[in-house]
Image 1 (cartoon, rainbow, N blue to C red):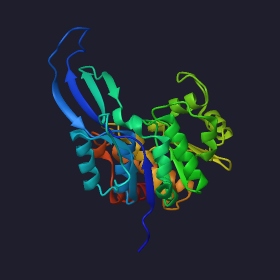
Image 2: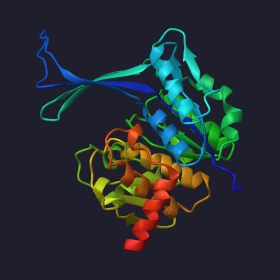
Image 3: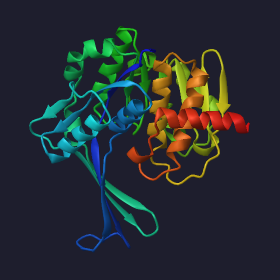
Image 4: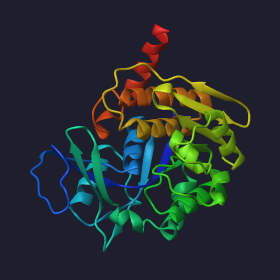
Length: 312
């Protein structure tokens, strides 16, 4: 039997609490909302679930509070067969929470307390060196302290373990981090910020890719939404088109893309094959509402790829 790829995800868990309202309240005003919902979130958590559903053995390293919200997260990981023995528990901070208001026009206002995620420290990651060293790839996102991101990349690189960094939400990183990154997966706005530009600046994606490679990153995939993804490394560059699907909700696309790319690279797939796989997984994700609900399983992605091949 073929060995499953082993992936360690170092990242966040944040529960989302959402309520709809006709309009946003003004300061001091109380309004009645409706359609309250509660959903699993955090880019690290989402990507850990995505990797597990795509057939990887997943270790999740994150920090949650000793509360009912944290208990619910652990139940999710049990159901998804994610290894949680390396989780960190805060004695003083609650599990991360995001409060989201959505008005009738579809605009939203978000208040975020990442809580226990702040206590996922570089010192704790250092204690996880053995786990990281035995992984095929490490996935990192940016809802945890910058120093923790840097330490994770440093440890993985020192053991020859591939590093996939999904730089969202963007935070400035030390220049020393970039050469440790095997695969960087920003969207266009994040790519502009990484290269010192304004998110509104008009610049060719080829220039963004070239500038990121100059920083030491080995491979970069800039996701372009409905236009697909731009791929570049020291050998080649090209744009891979998106798959044509009925788009329902794009909120799970980025996490699905990063998870699928990580699984494919960990399984030893060539870069272009990994990109094709990630684009297919993210295409499936946008056809359903929600994030966890939309993250596809391996069989679904393989079936989708097969059907796309037959059509073409």
